[in-house]
Image 1 (tube, helix red, strand yellow):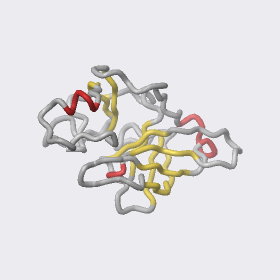
Image 2 (cartoon, one colour):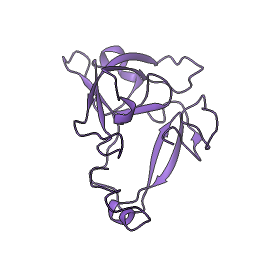
Image 3 (spheres, one colour):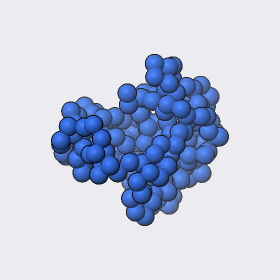
Image 4 (cartoon, helix red, strand yellow):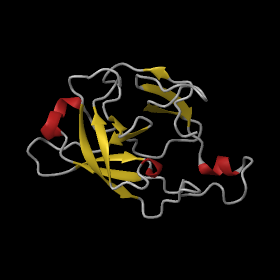
Length: 173
């Protein structure tokens, strides 16, 4: 189930300043650019292609933390969808989508920061974190507050040694 943050816990407001909520409530994304106010440039959000399927544009909520409460820094913009050209909804290969949004700093530069990206791929077995508004347990209800959870990064080589059919794990995942 792709709509879960199983085992997650609530976070403090502003703890994930690059986290955005997309359209409905189950998908999120990460702001990957931050232009200065006055720059005639777009900002970009990275999300999963399965969140963008069959859409040309998606509403992007910046600064959201609790869905039931309006935060002073919260605002929304429309994002133009750019799907990975080789996305495969059956295998989930290339499950990447870029959203082009207006210069977010022109609206509120204090509401967000770009995601802090690692300089290299994580090592196998390292704990990484994800955040969102997905359910905290299988079959559970959707939380009102943004949550995060630590997950273990497993590389493709290790995954191929598990109980998957040949070809189930590819380099495009």
